[in-house]
Length: 250
Image 1 (cartoon, rainbow, N blue to C red):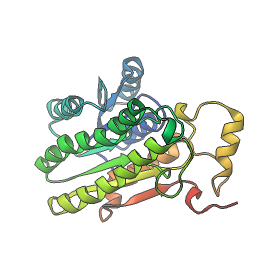
Image 2 (image 1 turned 90 degrees about the vertical axis):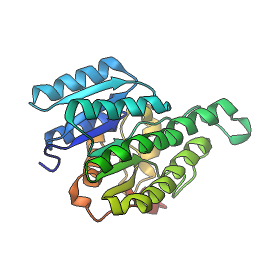
Image 3 (image 1 turned 135 degrees about the horizontal axis):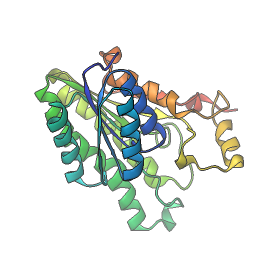
Image 4 (image 1 turned 135 degrees about the vertical axis):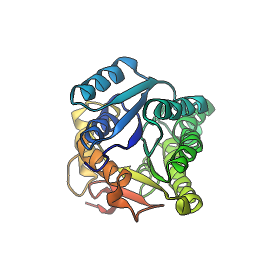
C-alpha cells in the first residue's frame, strides 16, 4: 500500500494512462481526485474505484485553464483534507504538420494545454503540498522533443520539452520543502491518442528496442514509482519509460 491514506490528483484520468494510473493508485491506497474533460468516463471510473472500497472524486474541466487546477486542489482539500501528490498526465498533440504550415491557433492551443497547463497545475498544487509537509508532482512529458524530433510534431515537442525544464526548476525551488518534481517520458502506448491503425502501430513498434508498444498499465507503474516514496531521492529527473526508443537505431 505505497500510497495508503495519501491524496493524489490525476489529470487525463478518463482513459488511457490516466485511467490505468487511477486504478493502480487506488489499489495502492490513495484517495483520488480525477480530472479530465469527459464527465461520463470519469464518473464511471470513480464508481468503479468506489466499488473496491477506495475513494475517488472527479471534476470535469479544461487543463489549460488556471481556475480548473485551483478547483481540483480545492476539491482535494475539501474532500480529503489536503494534497500529497499529483500526476499531471493530460495533454494533446494538436493538429500535426510542418511548422511553416502550422496555424498560430494550433501552436497556442498545444502550448496552453501541455505547458501552460503544467504551470497552472504547479502554481496551485505546490502550495497545497507544502501545507502537508511535502509531496510529489509528476508531469507526463515525451521522448518527442527530448531524444528525437518527429516531423509534424513541433508544437507538441516544444511543449513536452518545456515540461522537463519546468520540473528541473520546481525541483530546485522546492526540494528543501520536501517537494519532489519529475517528468515521466512514455514510449508509444496503446491509448486512444495512438489510434487504431494497425500499420501505424507497426511503425511505432519498430521505433522501440522492445519492438512493441506499452500497455497503459506499464506506464502507470512508472508513474506510481515517481509519486510514491519508492523514489524518495529522485527529483528533477526525466524518467524514460520508453521501451528503449531513445537508444534504438534498428
